[in-house]
Length: 393
Image (tube, rainbow, N blue to C red):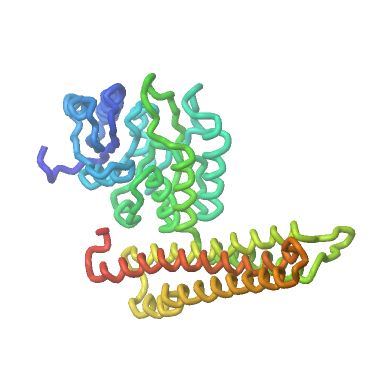
C-alpha cells in the first residue's frame, strides 16, 4: 500500500516476544475489519523480539515498525506514529483481549467519543486471567484515585484494550515510556475535556509458559507517581500544607511537655507522629514543586514572562539556600542539646523532645536540598531546550 493511503482504524499491537499469541491477535483484528467492512490496518510495534514474532506479524499481513528504546509506552508511541488511521485502537499481544471487538470501539468513535475504554469489570474476567490482588485491590484502588483526582469517570483504568482519535493523541503530548503510558493517556484526556466512554470487554488468561511483562509493585508505584505529577496543583498544595501544619502544631504543642486532651495525656508518641505528619506534608509540597517544573517542560501554555517570574520565586537557588539554612539549624540545635546533656553529667540523654524538634528541621532541610537538586536539573533542561522542538528530550 502507498504511504498516503488513509484508514478508518489502525490497530496497534506492542510486541516483545509474543510468538505464541501474536498471530491469533492479528487474525481476529483482520477478520473484524472484513466482517463489518472497515478499512483498517494492523501495526505491530516490535520492541526487540527475538522469538520470530516479527516474521509471524509479516506472514499475517501486519505492518511492522521497530521501537528501539524498550518500554510499553515507547513501543506504542512508535506504532501510533506510523499508523495511518483516523481512530487508533491499542491492545496487548498476549491474546488476553478479543480483537474481534474492534468494531465496537469504532462504533463509539462514530458516535462522537474521543477516548473509548474497555472495562473488564463490566465485562468478564476469566478464571486465572488476573491476580486477585490486581482484581480486588490494586486496580480498584488506583482507578478510584484516578477518578477522585481527575474526574475521569471510568471503572477500569488499566484495561489494555482501548481506542482514541488521532487528534486527541496529538493534543495529549504523552511522555511516559512504560506501562504508565496507558494511565497518562486517561489523565490527559480528562484534563482536555475529551468525551470518554467505556464498553465491556473480556479478559482471558495468558498463554501457558508466557512470562508476564507487568511488575505489580514497580508499575503500581510508577502509576502513583504519574498521578501525583499530573494532579491538580491546588489539591496537592492543600493536602501537603494541611499535613505540614498539623504536624508542626503537634510538635510545638508537645515541646514543653505532655499535654492533657480530655481524658487522654498526649506525650512523645504523639510528638513523633506530628513529626511524621510534618515530613510527609513537606514532601507533598516539594513533589508539587517538582511536578510543576516537569509540566513547564511541556509545550508552553503560558507567557514566557510569567514562567520567568515563577521560577524567580520558587527557583532552585532560593530553595537550596533555605534547605541549607534549615539543615544547619537542625544540626546546630541537636549539637547544642547533646552538649548540654553531656555537660550536665546526668547520665543518658533525656531531653528527647528537643532532639525531635531539632531533627525535624534537619530532615526538612535535607528534603529541600535533595528536591532543589532535582529541580535545578529540570529547570536547566527546560532552559537548554527553549526554542527547540517541545517533543524532544
